[in-house]
Length: 327
Image 1 (cartoon, rainbow, N blue to C red):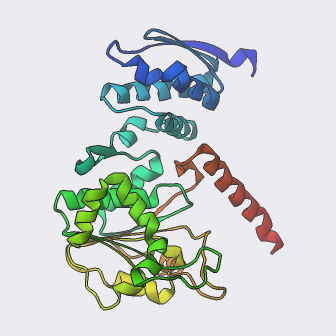
Image 2 (tube, one colour; image 1 turned 180 degrees about the vertical axis):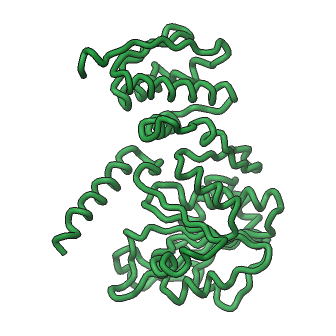
Image 3 (spheres, rainbow, N blue to C red; image 1 turned 30 degrees about the vertical axis):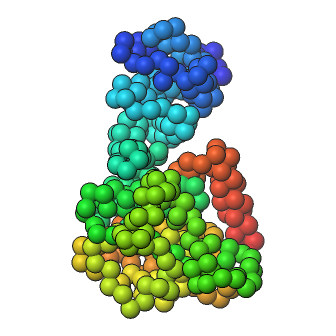
């Protein structure tokens, strides 16, 4: 770091900012910002000193100021939000962290508020609100399925739809599982488990059971969709990269009046047999120009799992790009 670029800035936080929330236990949140922006941050009560390269200090100050405003609204601040805010401001100095995190999706039965954690997630949530058909495409860990289920639960609780239909192809992820014992439900249940997991993260187990019993929530493989018309439903097609061309066309044409459909998938993780075209890949080519359909693309910046997942996704993308010319 050049000495001529080093500056010191003083930031005075509003007296009503909860410092325990903002700074984190043992100032952990400050340490996260220090690491992201390569600056030194020292807090003395509501006065904060930032020292480092001028441009990085400005970014760190903006991130800290916006996080302080978020805390003033009563929103909880965890390590995940701090890391996400730091990434947003690092990538775009004009990023509005507060507007992203303040966009809460209410899930009344657990009194939870689910919020986007990245600009990409905010764009995705906005698209779901404003379009009847949305494609969410990107790597694992970007919140595609979880946010879609949260929006579906919110719509059901607000009676905007009469039911939720969650579906995905029953395709093995790169391994042959062989014969599965049990009845039809027991055979397909393992493939649908991630959708149940998302529901249980948002709703109490008993609530999910009651909604399933009343058919207000239906979880089924795509094969079960043939011949149906889905009116007043919030439909989520998960792992859509593993649909065939025929399956994708079939399920998209099931959508009836008053319904909304969200299609999620990762085109870098297709588990179809060699020679089979992914229904999601073809849908991108066929439907990308159709009015009323929104395509939202995620990348490694939108990963909100363990911080190593972002590094893994980035490394695989770089490796794939390097290998492409050799193929």
